[in-house]
Image (cartoon, rainbow, N blue to C red; front, side):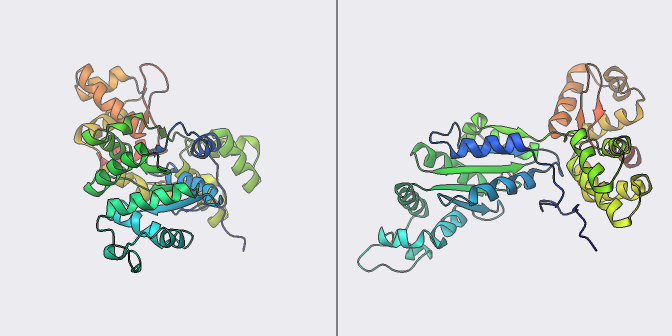
Length: 344
């Protein structure tokens, strides 16, 4: 049996993929430029918006260049220690460090070098290694998926800023939920992150989704567009709906109950649990309001205009709702309205 071209695994690149070509190309071209306009970039969006897939696509392209060393680090581990260990253990770099007499044995990162005092400070060790990499005209890309504002992240990003000031060849690409990226940017020691580009992943083009569905399932233009609109351009929904149709060998209308169940269990329950009480009140008011007019929603909530705007703007930035036209709000995620009505 032919393999299902769609995937339910977060971060795993499916066979059927709609690339965000322009945004991906911009990051790659900037990083590869002789004088890059920026060396740090952040990708943010709601769960299931394709952050990890985009990160994977970029790193795959950059890894194919011999002038680059790419390292994927976990935000839950000691990032500086992991960075140093990855540099020292890279088979293409270890000989360079040995010839440069960089003794990392004290830190447990390399073998003893006779006649050379070991480096005892890990930050000094990283700096020395990066200096040698720079002399070899190579660049280092560090990727961090699902960044959070913890102590190890704050320490690492702060040191990363110093490496950049020293003209060392380091680049940082992070993904994260809006609230986590926002918290990092507002950390008083990391204000330079405000100047770093932040790419917010918006819904995919409905026409591109329809074209994929049309070709894979041999649909008419009209049927493919109806199926695509059911996803609202949400990347994970595009995968789920296609996956279920392929798996069950049936039409998209017949898998809608299972489609809703997958979205709720894989994403919506987690999204809902991370919202504040006021965020949930606004979404509930939206779900109850027939025409989605801001005035009617605000009256249902019994909130003043100023406080209402705070919650509305926060939910828009989180990627949960959108303002398609002045004075109106709409749900960004497919079937999220029905989920909210059940949750209330």
